[in-house]
Image 1 (cartoon, helix red, strand yellow):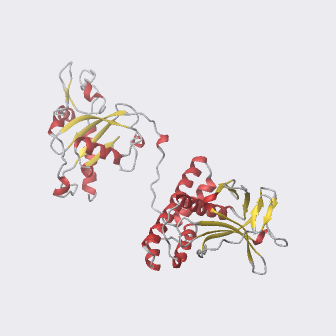
Image 2 (cartoon, helix red, strand yellow; image 1 turned 90 degrees about the vertical axis):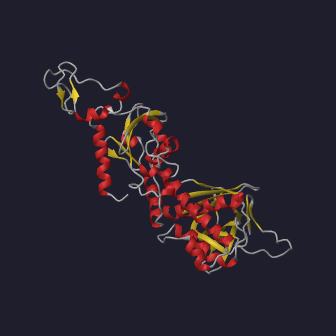
Image 3 (tube, one colour; image 1 turned 60 degrees about the vertical axis):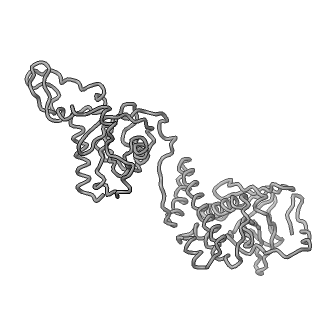
Length: 408
């Protein structure tokens, strides 16, 4: 039987030719109720909605050959295919949490609506069918082995259940051919990426229920994720970051062009490319906080032109870099030392002289202890770098404490 817009029609007999392998690999099957064009229920006479099953299968002999079938399993145990579609000829759309719609892109352009028993089953089904739909549209022609249907079924079903699934381990366990193993791994990753994308969309839309389901599915698979706000969440303009660079023997000042959305890891790579500092020797301090690689500059308050940061460069021995890893990298380049020498910071860290009475004041005093004259301003090139004269000392102390309490 075949479904058309005019009603039920007897499917034409297959043309003579070499036998084709059946779509014997069932990827997923779920109970649904269905309506043709949103009006006429689809079921055999005398059967109820509880007997309908929506079934997704694939041709084990040809990757990308997916079939979507609506089956009626009556109480007698007899299963009849009411309608069957090549997944490459349909458009599948999620209308609501429990209602999906299938439209055939070829004549007679049938439209079928499916209602699921629960939102969880609907979400599981949509995750699998959407991934399979993309695989079908890619039209990959890899040859699969018929004996691998169990592994393929496990790949789809276990992504949506509480059992973690490893396609590599599964392929070794059942002895898949290389083409089949590659397809299985690609399909598994496609499903996981779909879950991640759906989770991001649900969170952005404020759909807490959908977000919980997708997050639970990913947690059940024990997937390693990197979650961070989209670049759209940050200001999208370039700013100048005032950086004091220091190693064990010298200091200098540079201005680095950055975006607030950049991570500290990206900043390390930029400094590596521009100045030759190996990322592993860099220790960044912003606002007296030792920066973590995964955090953005904006999370440390870097959002305006002229915001400051401190970069301390460890020795190769401290960073445990091999001699080969050190080749092509430096601590402080000689050319940097001629840019903005910071020798004056050594005097600022100890004491300062009053311009009125010449009294030598402690570094922590904002004004003269004798005549109350205002403290002289630092040079303009360093004015915006650190408002407090002990900032570099504090930043250096932060790195020193880190180096003494952790194993690099």
